[in-house]
Length: 237
Image (tube, rainbow, N blue to C red; front, side, top):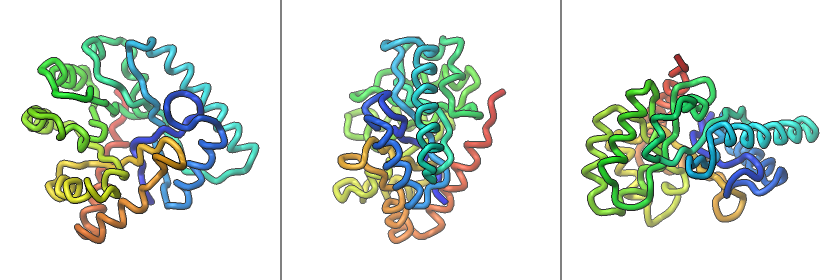
């Protein structure tokens, strides 16, 4: 059964599922694909509001979704709440940063700014680590396109943070070879659908796993699944 470490299934909170019907359709498809657990990780950006404000909106969306699941009798994967947290200079200083962690863990899904990385970005990731959290870098494969980023990545990866890759990147024929190379190298720890809807960015986890197993062997995916289980055991202090 698959562990989906990145999704936008909560209704009406970000650029993901626009309404309850879309959320239920996405979760139903995930269930059919064999996903047993999905992390609901809506976008969080400190410049758009406080952590408290975000948590209220996220939990309201989750509550509406769970009420709809109960009312319709839908069978869906287990959902853990979290966030896709855009890196910012003040992030590590937030006293309630733990509220953005994946529910029940000290793991936090971080989104790096798109573009060439700067020293403050890497330093902020270190500060988050030093504050007692375990960063998971969202969709690492997207950042290689920017000159100089690969050198910064070497520093970050040596610090022990985890790496998440998008299933859609593996399915994409233009990116597939590069993504499989990263998986084969051992730097990819977990997968996420990063699903936003049922048309342009649907759940593709099962298709991605089939490609990994075909191209790299079952052991390559089993390692990813084991990594996911171990990350979910990193409990909050």
